[in-house]
Length: 365
Ligand SMILES: NC(=O)c1ccc[n+]([C@@H]2O[C@H](COP(=O)([O-])OP(=O)(O)OC[C@H]3O[C@@H](n4cnc5c(N)ncnc54)[C@H](OP(=O)(O)O)[C@@H]3O)[C@@H](O)[C@H]2O)c1
Ligand SMILES: *[C@@H]1O[C@H](CO)[C@@H](O)[C@H](O)[C@H]1NC(C)=O
Ligand SMILES: *[C@@H]1O[C@H](CO)[C@@H](O)[C@H](O)[C@H]1NC(C)=O
Ligand SMILES: *[C@@H]1O[C@H](CO)[C@@H](O)[C@H](O)[C@H]1NC(C)=O
Image (tube, rainbow, N blue to C red; front, side, top):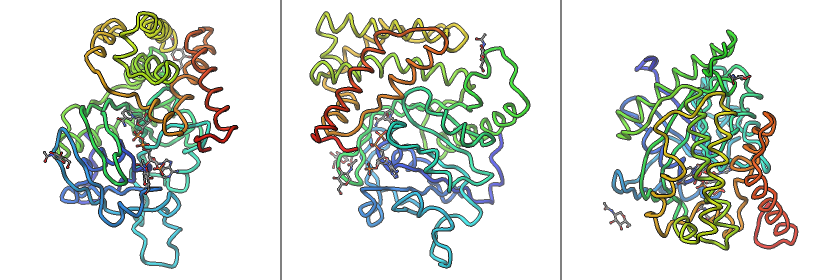
């Protein structure tokens, strides 16, 4: 396992100090092991800069996280932003890891260009975001940088500025990202092999730190194809319940399942993804994955929870429509696979969002 030189400090910058970012950053920061974690915040910069992040967690109790440094913007975390000043807390020889934990909104902003000034030759890029196809813009902009793709099932929220509540679960699955599907039987080129090898090293180091120092038992390393399979499988949940919670008038997941027509609709979406995924991934889904019927059964017990997309819609924030609906529809279509249920949800929700924004109601652009 390549953990580098233990005497050499490792500098990690989280971009996006929200629920997921603050929770995982707080479990990675271990100065006694020479691992220094910093945050770039936005609206909640001043709270975090003054008092740190308050964490109320189900798994680790309550504690305050004082990051190594907090920056009010991404550009403030570049070395050049402090040229002429000795004040900067950006590491002199660049960031070892940039971890992106913003909402994935490729229709609003291109975070790959946002982070570009932070990326040095040694930087490993880590993406902890929902959906599929989130890695594409990063791979295009940084063809030779290691990328680690990550999926988490944590349930966490920012309850007030600088206060993060983790309600339950900690599991995160990680995988190196080459070009998307390496490992499905095709032979990667030498260049892709190298970028995967470095991604694999970063993944193993992060897994080790989060597990042994951070105490998160279920951080799990995977191959590229395994991780993409996990992303498509998680879509069965996210693409079914999240959009439908908005379009059904604001109903939670278990509540939707109590309505027979909605239940049929939810299962229909899950089966559509279940059938498309092996064609996209070039391999059958591994045995042992929770089937749509199993997912529905376990969701029925989880009453009261509102999906994040519904919370975003109700707060007038943009929804993660592209990575949860648009990308899967386009990726499958390129391979000749249509996903009509997903396509309908995509078209309707995108329109709802656009109309509301054009009327200037709530939604911010
Ligand atoms: N929360 C969960 O339980 C959960 C579970 C599984 C997966 N996920 C996924 O994890 C990802 C992150 O979700 P989240 O719940 O952590 O979202 P969140 O709480 O809304 O956090 C996103 C953060 O990113 C910040 N941000 C966005 N653009 C920025 C920029 N240009 N510069 C600096 N900061 C910026 C936002 O700042 P502002 O406050 O200024 O907008 C916000 O603090 C999403 O893809 C989500 O689907 C979340
Ligand atoms: C953590 O803080 C919350 C909110 O103040 C409180 O309700 C909870 O009991 C605390 N948990 C522990 C383990 O102290
Ligand atoms: C961040 O702080 C602002 C005001 O300080 C607040 O309105 C906003 O809801 C906070 N953001 C989150 C995600 O809690
Ligand atoms: C494997 O993935 C490549 C893309 O990396 C794709 O072109 C190829 O069709 C896939 N193989 C199979 C058997 O699906």
